[in-house]
Image (cartoon, rainbow, N blue to C red):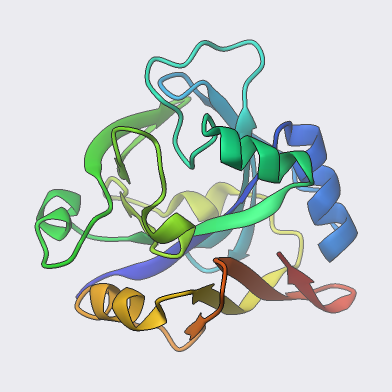
Length: 211
């Protein structure tokens, strides 16, 4: 398969709200990352292990997106959800060839979109309407350029991902769609009436949960 767990994403209406949510949950303050001109978003980033990181993302109030924003950030229902507080909305796996991965059976992750943040560029799967397949339970796919993984340059605040639990009303279909693409003992797929993601993380203050 060649795919690996890459990062987990907290969405918020503002970065300040997202950073405060993570501070309350994990006891650390995640530093700024950068801007995404195409999407009109910006983020904060920290390492969660080797080749693995946490992203906090929000609309950039001084930017104009050039297309519908990713992670459903322009969707009224998502904005209503985030109005109740920042949330862990999806997860991302990296693949060696995104174009080939998107041709796989049952893959509904969208189209390969070129993105930039500062001098860094990559390809990522985004449906044209900015939605998240399976409501965020199915991962976004990403292809990084060759070289060191971006997490190597991110702040290491002593946090490490132990486990990611993803639930969906139709976990059987979700598991079937994911099966040919990805397996990782840290990721558990289960049934629930609504989509929920929960990350169990080792922090300097002990084991904490991020939702």
